Length: 177
Image 1 (cartoon, rainbow, N blue to C red):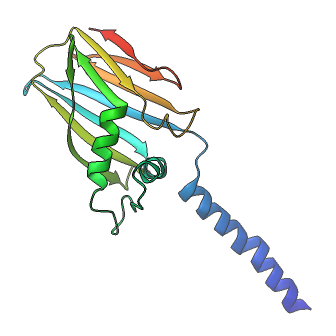
Image 2: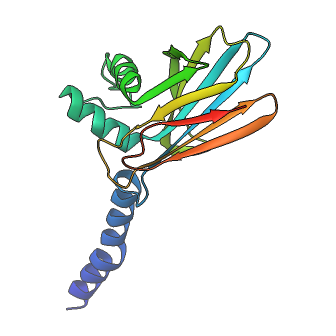
Image 3: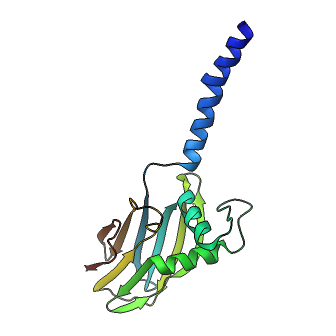
């Protein structure tokens, strides 16, 4: 009888909470957002772009779109993952600077275990940008997955910072410097 009580205590008070916490932190987060930082580098006349996206959300949309298991940010990562990310971003992040459209060049991705193990940082760059008057842009990353998705895009140019918050169905914004 005492052994049964110990077993049930162990099962319900130790094992189940640990299992639910680990599955909660790995697979679920109650907020759907991405953050994109775009900073002008006057020295090499470029825009340096960093997208921060939850790993599980990005993996979910890419696997759904490309119908293959990716194992994003693991040792088993699919060989075409970077190609899928580039294709996805071309459709969901656009830039038009002073009336000219640009497609950012992909420069890699990484997971920063010190800051946030649940996010992937995606690096990109646009060359040949000496100055900026207006930026027309769209950021619909993961909006095809979640209708409560919000995307923040922060632009930094000549020490000034301007930001845009995209919600579902908000497709394009224009800012001026």
